[in-house]
Image 1: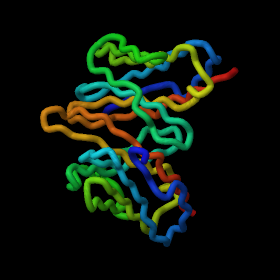
Image 2: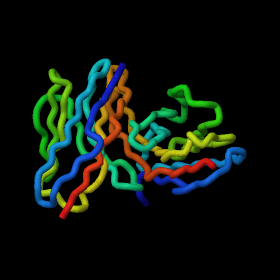
Image 3: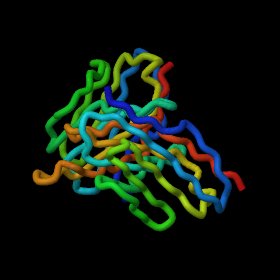
Amino acid sequence: ETGVTQTPRHLVMGMTNKKSLKCEQHLGHNAMYWYKQSAKKPLELMFVYNFKEQTENNSVPSRFSPECPNSSHLFLHLHTLQPEDSALYLCASSQKFRDSPVETQYFGPGTRLLVL
Amino acid sequence: GQNIDQPTEMTATEGAIVQINCTYQTSGFNGLFWYQQHAGEAPTFLSYNVLDGLEEKGRFSSFLSRSKGYSYLLLKELQMKDSASYLCAVMDSNYQLIWGAGTKLIIKP
């Protein structure tokens, strides 16, 4: 089983649809992240969960709703999206240690989202 | 504001050497990461530098100069499979990762 998996890999949805992206990590990590990657732009951090608690929400519109039921699973619920939300959505995980705040993030392959 | 600059695209020849530069202006510094991302795949960790100098890992090396706000990734003996995007990211004083837009490296035979 690869470290971080994401489903679906590709998603096309209309602006009135509701869909969910799923991420699962098999690394035993305690932190998980959602990023948005648009062409020729830096990765944009959307949400961070530490020990299942949301610790970051970088001014993300409410049409994106994260859920972290346990330390291995992370969801991103989508509703009434806009065409500009079309992008690659990457999930990552890391192991945070209390005595060492620097950690390496491991990424999933992403979900390529197209909003029509 | 915080900023990471790296070239958008580079082209190199199989078997050659290429250097991908990254300059940064951030509020604080807690290390610099390089990731490789093949098209349609996950970014994968390549290196982490927090002290000045060169770190070598096989065909890949990463250099850091904190005083200059500068890093480079050096790829030797280029192979076709090295065609990918290379992402530079700096961890700032709040331990947040600030990302560059990535450098797309094209390897030609």
